[in-house]
Image (tube, rainbow, N blue to C red):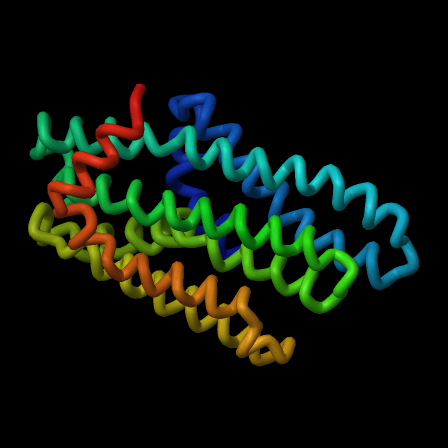
Length: 229
């Protein structure tokens, strides 16, 4: 929760009033989801199971909101790609392929998030399975927020090289951090070989292919075809 908020802080709060409505909704549904993942275990382990179950039903509604608002943000990636093509001087190292790549990996992240939530519902009577499927969602959706924060720091440090900065370096660093946190948590809770761990690790490894995906004309055409304004 702290890392996610620190990562997104400058991008969200720095231009708060200029953010689109969809950005605000996505930010707050995502933030509340993280809060739910903190308070729900407390209720479950402190004799408040009725409250846990009621909040769980509300939480599933919230999870749907996280998915749908994330999908609604994809067109923003394509708009950024078009702007970067039209005004390359204003985007520096952020070339159009970068935004296409972001959209491509975010689709996989959103689908994986939805799958993990559904699996948590299916295994709701198996406490350890239920809990770990939900915990894994943290590592499935943290990349965009955390990567933005690391990118901002990286760009500030290397501003003298603008626009020749390799913008993928902070992405790679972000993924290493996320996978490290995932396996640290999995080791702590004895879930190293759990399917949810494999799913979260696989999705975050997939993000290493952001650049070749973004540069692929096939991927670009696919995204332009399915994502309309």
